[in-house]
Length: 115
Length: 114
Image 1: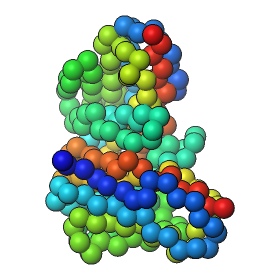
Image 2: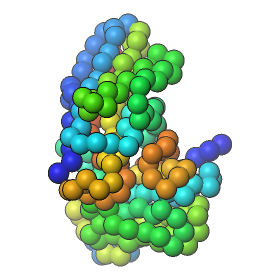
Image 3: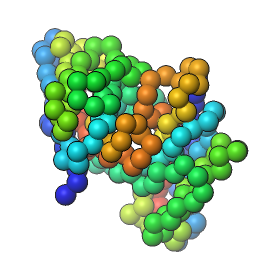
């Protein structure tokens, strides 16, 4: 079965620290999403990647297709960055055991940034 | 403003009483999907739709129905809800046929079935 693994599951850091959240997946993908979920529950899309690197403000997302790995980095972290960060992938069609069309999600990384 | 709107945000109901959670998007997206989120299990796909009148099962479709009569709307129907359907539900949409482009999520519907 195709899987998406995230690490760490929980991360507590001090304000200003550089944060890295990792995502690895089992087989080829056509797209990888990084999502943010705040305590209120709503989900916001941060990035969609199929190769390379993207940057938005203090957030940077990278993907290495050969290694089947992606990272989300937060520079100069702030308490308002506290949230659950979720990696989600769309596996290439045709892979056996790929399940239904759509996104397969990691279980999320619960990030707390302390002042 | 581009958005996916779900209603209601919160719902408590009793076992067996039919309910519908609505989802509407104003971006003319082809692809729409429903997910449920449970502690320890993460998000799992319930149903998806590639376009009007085209729907298909996701990974956990049992106990749910959907319809896509118009491009903007994709309601989730629970004909006879049971307590194991207590969950946080999300609707999502994407511009093209599959989630190979940016995904937009609704604010979620927290459902409790007693």
